[in-house]
Length: 534
Image (cartoon, rainbow, N blue to C red; front, side):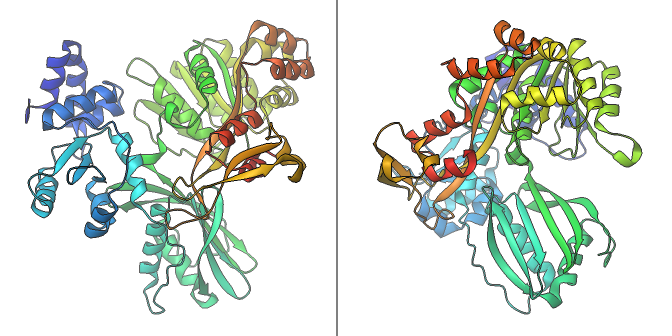
């Protein structure tokens, strides 16, 4: 089937793919920029990604890669990470010669370049685009001590800063003036790291570089600003949300980065325990009702809800959202941005969305009584409603809804699932170290995670591939799906009894229990569990 069209291969494998392929081709013709058919079919949930990957493998005449993603460090150093990131190719460490993984075998010029450099016996594999994007992140080596030439143009400095932030998978850039200098820090895996310091005399010009990108008037430092711009780094597109405040020391900026390719993660890839993933799947399939996800800002609530929307959306499902801000643009989803100045708050927009005949509604945050009542009304009238709420734990969400004016009977009637989560830093797999811990010699918070008097745990060390022994983050959570007994306790206002019931239920794992599981598996450190979960 080599060189045959993708649509024809899909149809030969399964004749039911005919209609989805026709729809994909129609979308492809309607776009003002070229887009691969396979990507469109997955993007619009017309054909599942696994089937597309197998069809692309047949088209290219290459096998599907399903092994471990191990970087060929020598090949990476010889050719340079920039080439592989730009061309979207992963250099794979494999026995028997050079091997590379791609998401599409149609990039013949890249294939020819690699064969010309390494010989005709180079092997190629096909992998899903989602898996490849995650693997390409392994090619970046963060360097927090980059020195910039004193006379470098500030626009080049700003470009270098954005490049470093993206390659380090930073979520935020902080540009903060103090009395004597301007400090720049990057938030990586939830923790701020120093990047560079500038003279105070350069502050205004540096800020204006970012103001220009965000189309803010130069020198307008006395006002609060919220804006956004797009940053392209090779083949990846990053949405940058700029927030400016006029501090006593001058303009202070925070740039929040959202890589479109990495932001839409499948639910199964978020790191949930098996019992929690099963609970979310059960809640997702309930035809109507309210699902609440709680936790502080930056704990991954929105990422989880987007992952659930990714599984819910499709050509036969109407999905609408109200968000502040809209962080990820999704096909087949009608997304509305909150704008208080125009009267578009969460409650007003939610009320309007009900007139759009939705099947699924996502409410970015339940902040007040009006929004809570609109969410309740939507859930009671046959809609699936996903929403976030700021509380410390899952049972606290019920008390918070009561504080917002809802009755316990109403809450019990519509609540399908409630969860809470945090993000914890994972230990670097390349340098983590196993040590012996004695329970009687650690602090009281640590003892809660140790079941025996002498325990082997893993601790961070630090190497060139990570930051202080940590690389990447995963989720710790507590999620429970409502049953008849739980509904009865809520209806009677017996929240304390509900908490006791959940503690006694062996099928429900709370957040600290989840963190303990990750410690036992060597994924996180004992200190990290205490830092995040207490």
